[in-house]
Length: 311
Ligand SMILES: Cc1cc2nc3c(=O)[nH]c(=O)nc-3n(C[C@H](O)[C@H](O)[C@H](O)COP(=O)(O)OP(=O)(O)OC[C@H]3O[C@@H](n4cnc5c(N)ncnc54)[C@H](O)[C@@H]3O)c2cc1C
Image (cartoon, rainbow, N blue to C red):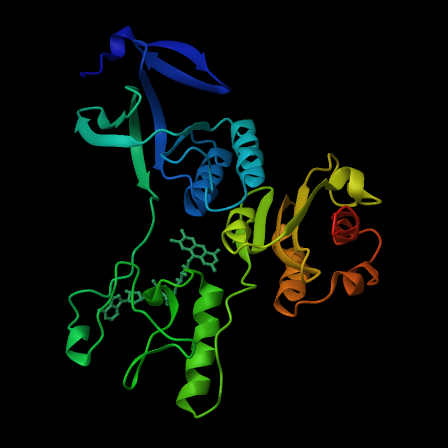
């Protein structure tokens, strides 16, 4: 559809001021495709630099591999930043006219953007290298490795190329495993407690299993969800308007944490308490007998652990 600027008029769609031409056209400066960690981080960055952003996510919620409680809260945060977030909206086609790129959304809407940022995921560049001549057949997610990061005879793979978890810290961990194996040490990778952080504001942090994954593993799950402003003693130590939520997932059978998630200031720092508890399978009775510094977000763990119904 041709864009008629002269017919434009200003209107309000949700919290975002947009320029609509007819009922379904919107003009923004940046349209971001994808509401995963990269889309969320970049969308918020641009919005806070004063750029009008539309964030279009095909899944029915943002950061959809994580707990739904995180998705709804980051959605609110992004809308507070006046981002035009559209979930359950797949971009079907991108084309252009003299005004710039135009995005056709599945629901019939059209967005004209000065810039488009595609953040719909990454795949490793491991195909067409001839790895099959070494007996290595890369799959769609990358090069399959064993727990020592071995990909084949005298071949190791580390980092995003393995498709295990595409994070810098995972690549660095795998590098240590591979180096140990190459030098004859017995090292095996364990991915059960790798932190996953989205550097949004507030930060999203998660570690271990989600509740969906725990159900798939047949775990008898106890879960707790606490609002940090009510749970910690002095929430205004770090913020004038305290905010944040912590979720804990425990295995009733083994009396250990199997997952944790948080959306709160500095969550990417204090998620490591849960990472260690999950990795070392520390009994919950030991965690509840461990004292947290007052006044810190870590106090929230003790409140959350208390709320787990472990019987
Ligand atoms: C926007 C964004 C934000 C991110 N933020 C975070 C974050 O906050 N924390 C985090 O942990 N992770 C983050 N990541 C993921 C992180 O960047 C990757 O997990 C990490 O870079 C993986 O390291 P790597 O060395 O395996 O691959 P890369 O960093 O992708 O490096 C691979 C290199 O190999 C080169 N290469 C490709 N093909 C060949 C070839 N045939 N021959 C030789 N060289 C080749 C490429 O040029 C590239 O330089 C982010 C990713 C993106 C896109």
